[in-house]
Image 1 (cartoon, rainbow, N blue to C red):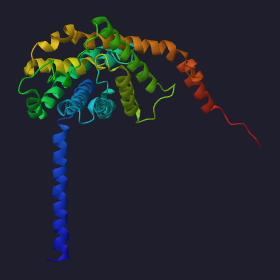
Image 2: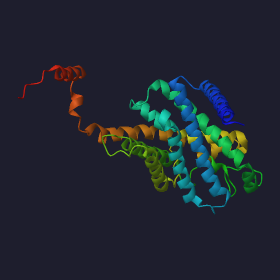
Image 3: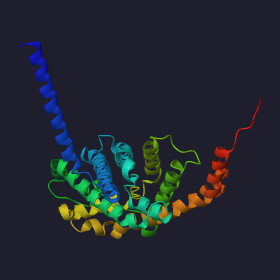
Image 4: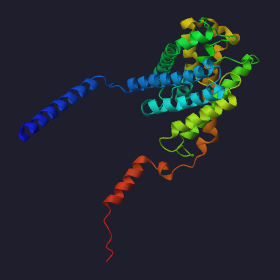
Length: 314
């Protein structure tokens, strides 16, 4: 084959590869969501699904290996890293809330339009249920071997705690509610601090790492009473799934019907924590003098400088 033929063949192959790439791009473009709310909703679904998968798998690894795989500490670290990964995956599109309590606090403080809140929360709960189903599927054989084929909520071979939080035997209803309110209030205070540009914000791109370290701190310090859920979707979504997957209605009656505490407590605590930060820190920042000027006056002032004739300095 001559050099000309080889060159001609390369051109044809490059032409066909270019056409193939264009066809692939056109196919992908058909799947692009044009509506920003739809993109944000899908992002919250995806992020919360990842959060639950990593969180529940971390707990499952500790429980189903009889604590030999890092035990409580390993599960706690895994849950904290799960939050970091979930925010990295979805933060650029929707903010990476992956938590109805966070979204609710953002709406209460004017950082998220109220019209978006139902979409965010619905996506978060659906993502949590989907993530639970994925964990159940990948650990099905291990669950059956550990429990002897009987899925229990309480007892020595209980496995329901892999998916949702349950209270310690000594915990009262009021104490559990206060625990969840306080832990989620602290969560929102520090989230506001991490993202506060006028305070000491985390370096750009490292905010998810800072939030993950925050979750680790809260879990290590406030996880004794009822597992430091601080997330209604992460707790109620998997609980609904376990009720349907074989654990039965006991997941809602265990611990003196504890199920509502990780739902109501975080929602109340998130609002309390966000307003505490605003009242104690945010409103006391020094204002930028430029922001005190009327926008129209500021623009006119700039235009006046641009049109002013330069002085003769000779």
